Length: 265
Ligand code: 13P
Image 1 (cartoon, rainbow, N blue to C red):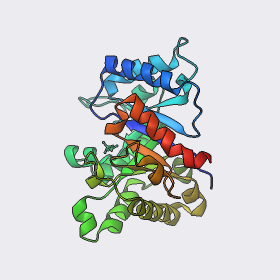
Image 2 (image 1 turned 30 degrees about the vertical axis):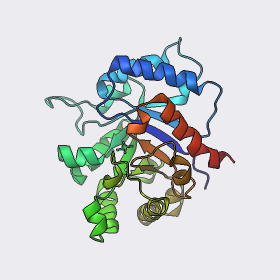
Image 3 (image 1 turned 60 degrees about the vertical axis):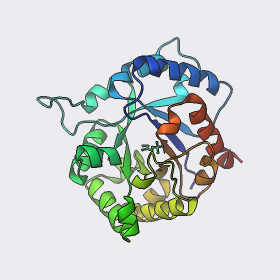
Image 4 (image 1 turned 180 degrees about the vertical axis):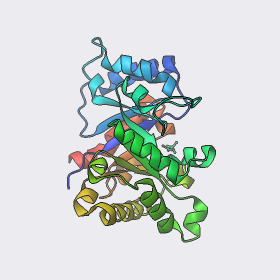
């Protein structure tokens, strides 16, 4: 199955509007002349979405601008109303947002998002035709305790409950081992490949072999220019969800370049 790799920058709580503008101008100029065989996505903080949409979708945007798609880092599971501090999927659509990161381990651990909440957000995102980037991953204690597969199975089964095969065709999964996020410790390519193959088998159990063969599974956790090629060469790894190393245009570009060279050859 030929799956197009997808490289997504998760800026987390970094870059307001002016830093977003600086990044995009620099990144677009670096992209000139390249036609990487992948999708490129940027997920800024909510507050920077209008600026990003403006930069990428105005008439003055360079020809590379449409090579970049926009993601939100979260969305509300509710439609509208008395939910202080929340942002709805309809609001996101106004700013050309196509993807939404859901279930990130920081949302789970710091903001108490349960599998049930994440599942409600997944459904709400799909109602608005947003493409979820559905994040899963185990802590070090869970891995060392021999619970890797149990944890991933629960996250996948509960998080995707009620979603259809069509929803899966529009979704991306991101496997992000919690112990590798922001730590500089990357999963070995073997550890990552094994987990990805297992996640794909879970999708096959739930949705059948064809959906499993089609769905893209990104790796996330300390992806850098110098480890991207090895990780992306693994048969079940279809791109990356990148935090720290996607804050600089040059290193984000190098990850994309190094990560797509094997696929292009
Ligand atoms: P780092 O690339 O900084 O480890 O972050 C990974 C991540 O959490 C992306 O969502």
